Image 1 (cartoon, rainbow, N blue to C red):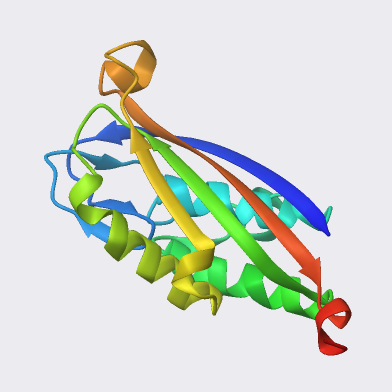
Image 2: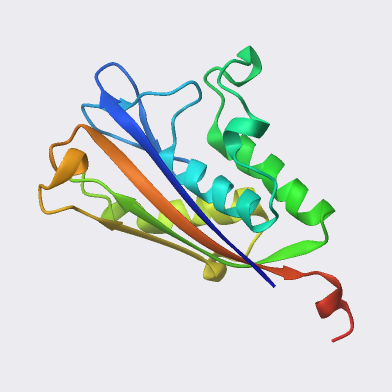
Length: 163
């Protein structure tokens, strides 16, 4: 088994859509970035890549490459999952936490879990998404940005072929 941890942060700005875990969230602000800036999916990609010691999403999808301008982070996640499978691993589980003062994310959690599960080719029961405020502390609390962390467990594929 291998464990990976990821973290990402993006600034909130006017004039951008807000995408989290592949779900468009209605809000007056969106996240700034080269891609769709889905901070939660970026943290998850980093956790997966970290579990395999393959670097981070900046290495695989540099913001200097015009191919990734405005790209859906779900496409990046699908590509990362191909790397996971090629390396001989399968997802055990993933746990994502989003830190944001606003908007309230609880109504979107199940849709987020479903979107991640679909992009990862995983069972929704293996995907956890949680959201928390920072009690108005820090940049998240001041609504200047949103951060996210993720942890994943990968299992060697061969270990389950003999069961």
